[in-house]
Image 1 (spheres, rainbow, N blue to C red):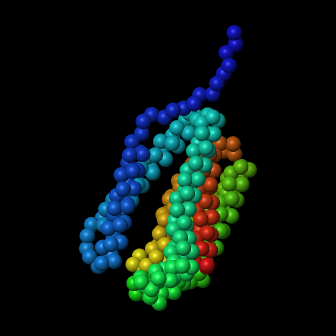
Image 2: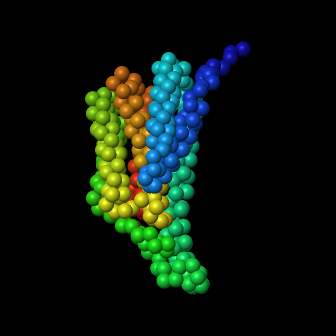
Length: 293
């Protein structure tokens, strides 16, 4: 009786890296929160130190986990079936990220479309307006809160528009890098991927410049009511995703220089591309709903 041949499905050994990553994210969350509070109040503390330790631990986790994955892949342990599992996993991960940002965009929608009109007395809420904040008129951006906090709105022109152009161009260059990989054009792959990384770093640099401008010149801070809260919430989390995406692209670039990836075996590159295009789409939505409208 002839036995049917099945592909091997590699099951990795237990790994410490998920736990290390969880600890890193906890330290980053605690450190960033304390750092913002200490900076706002002009106090000294340990927030910056905790944040720095969290970032270092995160980088160690990324290096160790990527190293293990690369060694397994280059050793020929992965099969087509496992590749399909990875693609499904990456698809679900990106879907979870969509829901992550949907929650924040939902908060922005609630504040602009429901909460502010309600506080200003629209519909049958006239008494609410009179009792809570008499004379308050709904507007967006809310540059003066019912509590009397004033700020200045961030214009869509200037740095936000430049950053939008940068990310759109980076999606194009990354696409051509992927095309070069599939067609066996290693020089095109290396050049286009390198340009994409430089564009990502440029975006992050200008994002920092924008935050400095917001705090120093516009008085736009986390204390600036719902407008300041949603602005920094959405742009800040997006900036974290761009940072992670840039790190992933750097790892892919180093692998390309070492001769990794072929036209028919490059899921890691494909996954990194998916992630980068996702953060680009999120930024376009941010640009429209946070800066322009």
